Image (cartoon, rainbow, N blue to C red; front, top):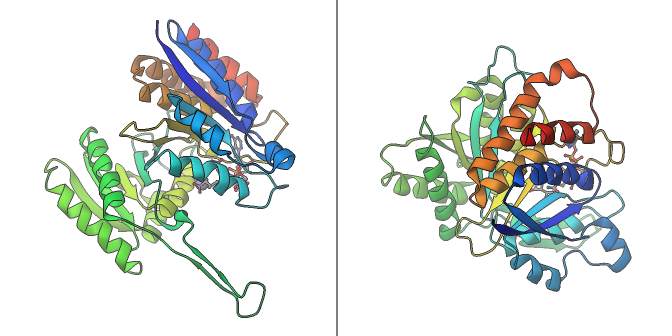
Length: 347
Ligand code: NAD
Ligand code: IPM
Ligand code: MN
């Protein structure tokens, strides 16, 4: 029997509610596998109490874990960006989560707002860069609060960072039936960063003759997600563009409550972190209304990452079976959905 050190960061709002269901399913699937869990009370409450977002000592403990499960962070009572930057982005940057892996997949029986679309039409993986771009925090403000205020927020893109995420995306594309990789950027305006991505794509493409490559401006991509999602198989894109298009991806694939993600450190120099794409949803927090499916599918990605592919498939199948029957079941609470999926996993 194998034991895996798992850090759990429930976070804010619906974070703890959906994480509880994720852990329920993890427990149900584990069998011989045990997860040695450590829970960290990071988030809004801790910030109010101590002013801390992510203390160095906690970051050092996180580094010693094998994998991390996160709910969501952010709360209306905390200045915007404090926890998002200080906790979530700091973790992604410090643990070198340079791949933000976000599948966009329509499961059978799930309703999509798009007309005439079937699961065959929406099955893509967005490989979002996770440690660079406009997220680095480079920039600043001059003459704040005056009519002459200047706010700059730079996009930082390195040859090293761009190449490693593009290489990862080629590997993902090569492993899939369609073997198609689309770069999504805005190289007609962001000429420096876009050109770096384009040249890198072309160079790495020579090593993957079996993969077809394509390019799409991000504005057009938002349109095609809605009008022709079938265009896409694997997408590689900048940190901010990837953030935006994966919320659209969630919407077309059945809603934000179903969208899973992994912040992956493919070199395994630090633990990877799995989390739903959605946030803390303060508008529905504490009401048992949150859909835990995104977190449960993130748990499946987590299992895959730690080498438990068979357990991952079982969780995915349980989710898929639950989704197929959902329309007939009417409204269920967060824990009812978690219970139903956990039952399918163990039964
Ligand atoms: P959000 O994803 O929290 O909510 C957007 C909408 O989707 C809301 O109406 C919400 O009720 C709904 N929703 C989200 N998750 C759901 C679920 N599991 N089931 C059912 N409905 C769900 O995004 P937001 O409102 O833009 O942000 C709220 C807070 O969360 C902010 O502080 C933001 O910074 C933070 N945030 C954190 C993360 C993260 O931790 N990874 C991601 C996005 C936003
Ligand atoms: C996400 C979120 C985060 C992001 C925020 C909360 C920092 O929107 O995980 O998609 O922009 O990456
Ligand atoms: Mn987002």
